[in-house]
Figure 1 (tube, rainbow, N blue to C red):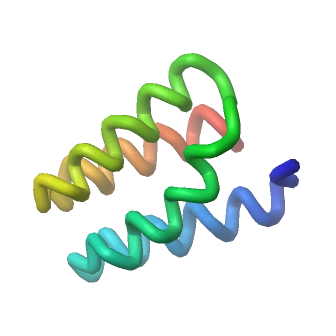
Figure 2 (cartoon, helix red, strand yellow; figure 1 turned 120 degrees about the vertical axis):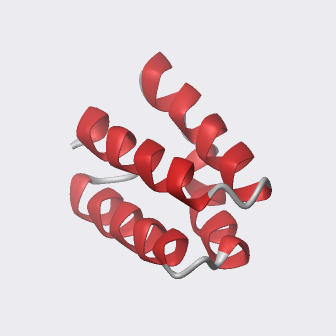
Length: 73
């Protein structure tokens, strides 16, 4: 189970990694979150973030991370 404090910290670290153009770290950070099922919107955003990071679309990933943060917190 992911509590709100850990979720908030994970999303913050994910955003920092994407902001530093570190897709390897960002993908490692999102992997544990992607194992959980949240809302349909949040699950789709996580898929988008993973795709954007793998495509080196950091601006898109940061935008999606912000949307994920708003939908979960």
